[in-house]
Amino acid sequence: MSDRYQDPNPLPGSLQYYQVHYIVEGSAPDRSLLIGRCIPVTKGHFGSKRVVKVKWETSDVLANALQSDSQLDALLKDVLLNEGEIRIDPLNDHVRIYGRWKHDEEPEFNPKMFEAADRIAMHIKEIIGKDKK
Amino acid sequence: MKQREQATDSDGHLSHSSTHGSHEVEEPDVITVLAPNEKLAEKMKENGLDCRAIDIGSTPIESGPFYSYNFSSSDKLITNRGCVRVFGRNIDMVQVIQRF
Image (cartoon, rainbow over all chains, first blue to last red; front, side, top):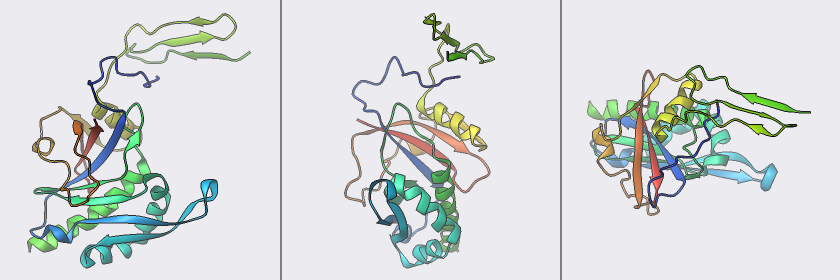
């Protein structure tokens, strides 16, 4: 079955740019603990471009947890070439993890991005749990 | 000569077949239009995730702001296109946002 049919009644004015937010419910009293972003350090150009290092700009608590996770590091090296940057954005009662906007007819699902976001969510939940105590 | 046939949907939602030589194209009888969150949920299920698309506007997350605006380049002209509830993972929900 092909699901690439365009919506015949699209919302007026909306552009074909989608962003998928991965949401973790719950929040720490100190939201500055959770805010952060992940920036790739790349080498090479065009087809030979690759991510050699993953740099986290976040609080010490979250950065220590994320940087020590080797499985997450390997996932991010695959994902960040496509995603560009991953942001962790805490709001009142939940935390959002998202990458860049994608220009497509419909929202794209990237299983590797989901796995990376799931591991980030695991560390966020650990911090939320500790912070509540 | 290459021949293509695609009429395998059990629900009869889509049927499409073409024969390259005779240029026959059958239009589908019924096209099911899915909301973006439903399409995403289908893709997630294909990847083995336990999830379910939920009605638009049924969670408080959808009514609040979608960014904290602590990052300077966060978009303002955006709209909610629905959520997908995820079960058995650290991520509780996935939301689709569209840009204006």
